[in-house]
Length: 302
Image (tube, rainbow, N blue to C red; front, side, top):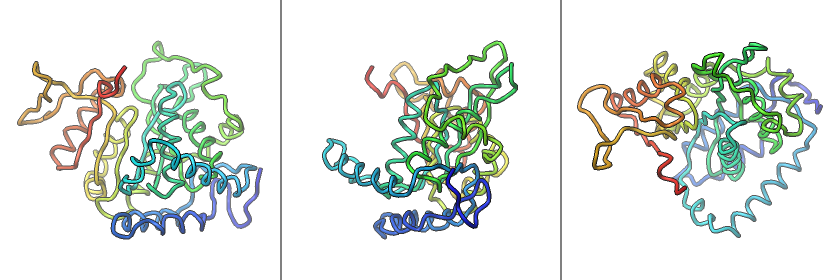
């Protein structure tokens, strides 16, 4: 493992090059998020695991990513992407699409197009044989993936296991966590931040109305956060973007009501993992007038 003089286990010095990269964000479009990057760089990177990869690897990946973006059809889309500070709540591992989403967020962070402020891994329940929440293994996978890109400055937190009965627990397959360095990272799971602690710390460091929550898994952690720190979340949140769904009427329009619950979560997988949490988050966003974007699986052609 690579040693870092002057740091303690689980900590890293802020990467000056990352701060410079985010400092290059257009001042009009990304000034707030550049300042968020500076503020977040001052914290301890809780849950960070050392790796033998050197910093030149990061520079190489960044160069290759930029070249690939210039050559791809997606370049125009990302060129016009507005700067954002993201908090990603996800459940990588058995769901390969969450791994892809994490890699996309990491790529945009490397390019300075977004600030990936924190990653929270949740879901899966608790292994009845070991008593270990699957969220811990998911967090280890997220950590080793971020470390592979030398993104030590992006902290990973362990979120809620969600309400899964022991009889419903599905043991993950070995290949779902088969990534170089995973075992050594998982062995240091005690260094990972508690999800709620990391979320509160992140929100306290950023500027007002600047965080976009991207929820690609159960809404349990955000529901707990808004219940415990409603003012903090309202004051710091720019938008809540959820991969989920809401009930529609016979005409296919959202079946909104004029009293709580204003929106009824549908049977989307992320909603079903914690239906009460989904309803609480949708209701809270409407009541607090926090912009809410819900993307259904039906939006993606099968």
